[in-house]
Amino acid sequence: MQLFALGINHHTAPLAVREQVAFDPLRLPLALVDLLRTKPVREAAILSTCNRTELYCATEKPETAAAWLAEYHSLPAREIEPFIYTHPRRDAVRHMFRVASGLDSMVLGEPQILGQMKQAARTAEEAGTLGTLLNKLFQNTFAVAKEVRSTTAIGANIVSMAAASVHLAARIFENLADQKVLFIGAGEMIELCAAHFAGEKPQRLTIANRTLQRAESLAVRFGGDAMRLDEVAARLAEYDVVVACTASPLPIIGLGMVERALKARRHRPMVMVDLAVPRDIEAEVDKLDDVFLYTLDDLGQIVEQGLETRQAAVVEAEAIIDERVAHFLQWIDARETVPTIRALRDSAERARRHEVDHALKLLHRGDDPAKVLEALSRGLTNKLMHGPTQALNQAEGDERTTLSDLISRIYRLH
Image (cartoon, rainbow, N blue to C red; front, side, top):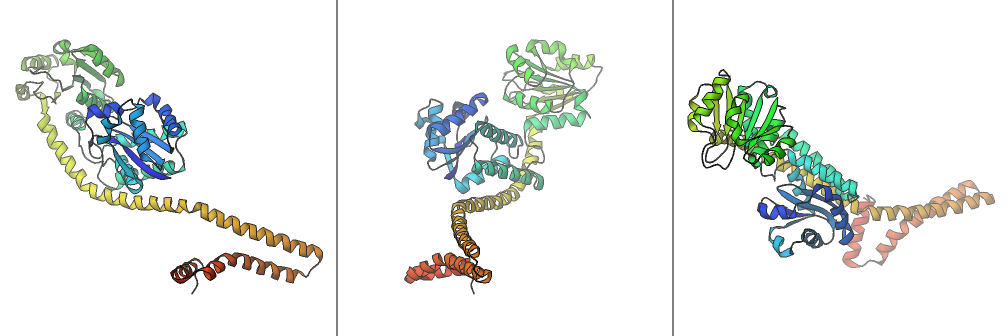
């Protein structure tokens, strides 16, 4: 049974394709059972995130798993075949180690993927599709990711706009837990920023959006509240940190609006982060004394510095991964010899029992114990030596030479 990793990710497929093969987390256990029931797959786990959908399988025919992926999502196979990659054995192990370590992520070194892989393993285990091989692989994967993160700088520094926003706000406010944060917009970037700020447990978190329903949906996820976009002007003074990212062609927050907010705040400082292109906050706001306005360019400098540090750590991480891949493959190879070892031991045990039974009969008959033990030892020796001796006697030419060398190694003959 061979090990394979197959799927699509942000490197091989656009979002329009990735979202078509994404799995509903609630239906994932049933999908795993279906995969094992309908195809020649012995073990399976599925990792499904916004950036990747991957199947980790123990099977002799990975093409059937790829076909199942298309069939399960009611897609013609030809629509996703150009985007699918298949990694056999060594490449599969290396791929999983790299994914868990954040080396294959859209944001290099991001830590969320490790938690997602752990959840994929738990789901497969609960569904009963995680066998000995995949279970061992996942445990090794988690250990490698931990080693990479603890011994290299792959997870150090800031490499995302969302994390940089929190970093800049923390420069001004010593404790973000005492601050109120307003997000303007409800798109993907705001969602990422809200997740990062929510981790700091601010005093209040509010989402403002043209569509109130979308704002409320996002706010619920992060324990915040929502408001309509047209309420921002009247309530801006309530917030210490403002993060804006909309698709508006014109600025949403103007100089006059901020001046009025500062007056109401009695000139307590505000941090404003504008992630939009074109800008959501008028550039003139940056001239106000009590406002710390940061744009995409400001955040980009922080991210670039962080990426340089992480890129330097990639070489170290890859070296660790290559070494651990070799160790895991050695375990697989050793596992494949288990049936032979078991058969060899069974054969030796049968010979032992036969000779012991024969010796006991002789002892019960009253024979000399010393002679019985001698016969026992000779009988065992003859039985255990019969196989290799016969193989040598029957072999010819190169085969005899090869067998002779192997037996010398096995029995450490000199």
